[in-house]
Every structure is written in C-alpha cells, then in structure tokens.
Length: 221
Length: 227
Image 1: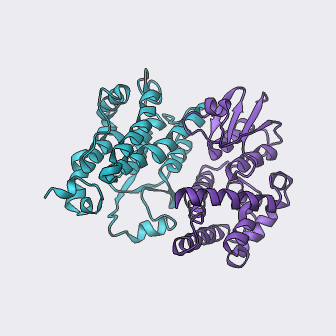
Image 2: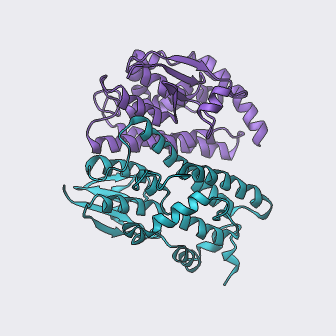
Image 3: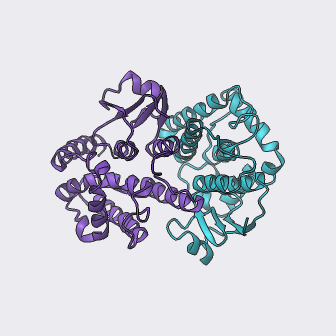
C-alpha cells in the first residue's frame, strides 16, 4: 500500500481539506501540488478529464477523483491504520448517508449565500442554517458524528468551519448563536492535529472568499 | 438474514436499482408502494430527513439514498457481488455512479425543461454527458464486465427515462448512430429477466405525467400541449 501519493489541491478548497485530513489521520506521506483553477495544469486535465476539478489523488500514477470517493479509497487501501468509516455495514451506511447530506444539502445551501444582498440571499442564509441545525440534531450529545472518535462524517463537515469567520464578517451569519453544538463540536475537532494543520488563517480565508464572491456575483447577477 | 422491506414507487429510476440488487442476491423482501403525492407515515418515519423513496428497511432499521442502499446491500449479502473488490476499480464505479446521477440525469431533465431559445445548448450538454457513458461501455458487454454489476444497476433505467424525456420535451437525446455502445448495452440489459420485470417503461412514464397533470407544469414540455 506504500507507493507514491500525489494530491492535486487548492488551498481554500473544502473538498481538498477533507482529503488532507484523511491523509494526515492515516499518517500518509504525499506530495501536494497546488493548482491554479483559472489556469488548470495539463496534469489535472489528464488525471480528471471528466470533471476537471480538484482534489485528485494520484496513487502510483492512477487517479481517484471526488473527495468522498478519495477518502473511502484511502480508508480501504491504508486499512492497517485506524478506520475512518465504521466496520458495521449499517453504521457505514449511516455515515455515507450523512456525508452525502453534507454534499447535497449543506454545501448546496452554502452556495446560495453567494448571491447579492437581498431576499434571495436571506433565503439562502436561512436554508444554510437549517442544514446545520439538522446536522446538530444528528450529532446529539455525541462528541463526534462517529461517536467516541472522529470519523467520516466529521471529516466531511469540518472543512466548512474554516469558512464560518468569512460568513460572519461578510454575511452577518452568527453560527455560534444559531448552532452552538456545531461550534462546540468544531472546536473539539480542531484539537486534533490532523484537522488543525489543514486550516489556514481565517483572515486569509476571508480575503479569498470576499474576492472570489465579488467575481462570481458580477459574472452571474 | 432478517426481515427486508423496500418502500418505493414503480416508476422511480432509483427504486428499481434496489429491487434489482435484492433480486440478484436472492433476497426476499416486502415491497411497500408509496404514493408520492400523499406521503405515508411510514415513509416520513423511516426517511424524515429527505422524505424520499427508495428506503430499505432491514430488521426495522432504515437506509436511504439509492447509492448508499446499494453499497449496504452489497456488504450485507455477499452472493453475486455488485462492486469490484479492488479499491481503485471500486472508486471508478463510485465516480461514474455519481456522474450518472449528477450529470446525465440532471442534464437530460434540463434539456427537457429548457425554453425554446436554450434548448439546443441544453441538448448538447446532455449529449456530452451521455457520450461519456457511451465511451465507458465501448467494447464491453456490461459495465460490470461479463455480468451486470453496480454501475449497470445505476445506469439501468436511463434508456427508458431518456425516451420519456425526449417525448416530454420534444427533443432528441440518444440514438443508435450517435451512441452505438450505449444502445447495444441497453438492448441487452432490458432483456435480462429480473431487470425486465421491474423497469419503468416510457409509455407508463408518459401516461403518468400526462394523466397526473404534471406534464403541464413542466416548462418547455411538448406533452403539455397535447390533450
């Protein structure tokens, strides 16, 4: 299971972060290649010709695409390290369901905040908070979504925490007030080295989000 | 291996995947038919988050989302495996399953619903995605190899749904000339007995959409103008 591991990535990407956390949790050494998404490299276009997106994991020259698919691949190949997904098929199905919810609902709602200020954006903000409240309900009183240990669902959601400061400053979304359990859970996750070291300075993320959003809004609205 | 129920609807392209998987593995199950216009307390109890079908209930415990259910079935009942064992091949199957759901099906619906001035571009976009599936099956009997597997079940009812969407939207998405490998595969696939007995048929889909009045609600619908 050794062999060369390369990750095509982009530093603020929520999806790239999931893979970085998984690699760190398993103690896997890899080479990281930063992509300029406005000028995609020949390597990225060769390794992910269908979607042309990061993250892409290249293991012994063979690509794996889509963050959750990559994380499951890592878990299956490096199976001598503590597992990211539960071993029981039913628990595993629940973990996959909730990670899918993060993609289909939390992420999609978070993109609706990328609208000019007004009624539509307010509706997007409300929807985003509702998806986080649903996650809070699923978390319950557990320390992690995985139970006693950090796992697949935690990993799929925690990168969003890196954008919360930007949402507070730019959009006045107070997640701490609306979803205190999510914040408590996020701070618990941040105590793990594998998670903390993938996070950048919140001000740097804020600057990136502000700039990118301006460009997106002017292109689309 | 315990009591199995499937909550589903006969015209759903997602539900038939589940029934095919269970039949392939020789698993007996009880089918509970759901009326999506009047969702039952059972559905709301077993899938409170999405309130959608299909839901698999195994020994009273629910699993929702068709791709999640397929993997659960494959891990719980080991005969006739659906997914490859090799992690890289498995990842590839999972990638294409997502592609079918997020690109092929979505872009086909978009083409169906597109306004006149957007239709050509929307059809091109849908055909681009379908072209990738055609390329994927080129030279192969089934997506799973010699026997049907996970990706065959996922692509499954797409040919019939495409025929339906073509009629609904007054568009042409697929034909034997443009996508020969996909066409060959679909002819073989629908003749397999367990597939044939539970596959949404284009005429039934058209019938459902016109009699329920749903056709009229679809912008760009050719069927809406037919009485």
